[in-house]
Length: 78
Image (cartoon, rainbow, N blue to C red; front, side, top):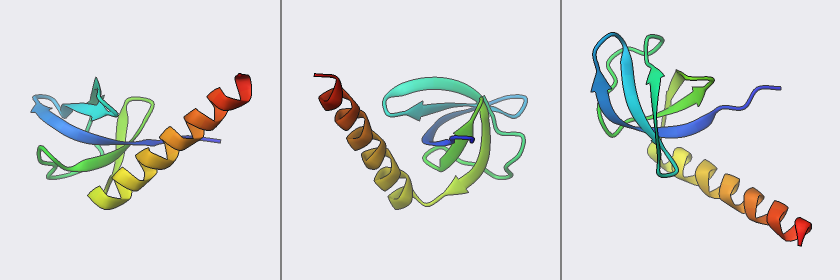
């Protein structure tokens, strides 16, 4: 099973690279698979590659669900 996470494009770099923010964490990724990205766009990231552009509202909803799942896991460990 593969997991991709939503990330916001924070900076476009040369050579098909970008800096993205994933829940406040910055990461350099490849954007070679997606044309015409701009700062502020949201993408799905998997193992350092942007796979697809996604709607900002969908990205925020998915991040919120991931945070809830993380909180549930912490509650189970307590």
